[in-house]
Amino acid sequence: MYTAAVITVSDRSYRGEREDKGGPAVKEMLEKLGYEVVHMETVPDEKEKISEALIKAASKDIALIVTTGGTGFAPRDVTPEATLAVCEKIVPGIPEAMRMLSMKYTDRSILSRAAAGIRKRSLIINLPGSPKGAVENFETVAGPIEHGLKMLRGGQADCAKE
Image (cartoon, rainbow, N blue to C red; front, side, top):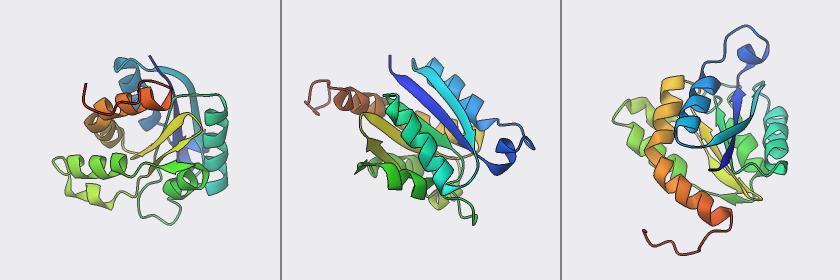
């Protein structure tokens, strides 16, 4: 079992004007997949605040950090930029696969600017703000992510399919 953090990026949820449905949906899905969600947080759509939340979670040695929200075209959607600013390594295959596999649900998946990367021993993945989209995106790549976390957390370095 790996630890996980869920960070919701939403101005309205941060201000209490809208209930956060994405974060709880992602938490529930992660727990069903066997993750122990040890941290949940809501931050505004501000690059510095998002980066601070990611750095804080990674400093707690949380294995998987997922964000929900802020990956679209809106002027305040800056989650990918905040993520890439704090990552030491980029993992482009995860968001590429999520976009590709999500095409079966909606052709709008190609508009996602989601990013993924590694900070210390934490894997950070951006998910859409929509609860349905966030869950569908993660579930499409859950298997390879588990293998990646095993490698990241010091497991056997053989990447051949087991």
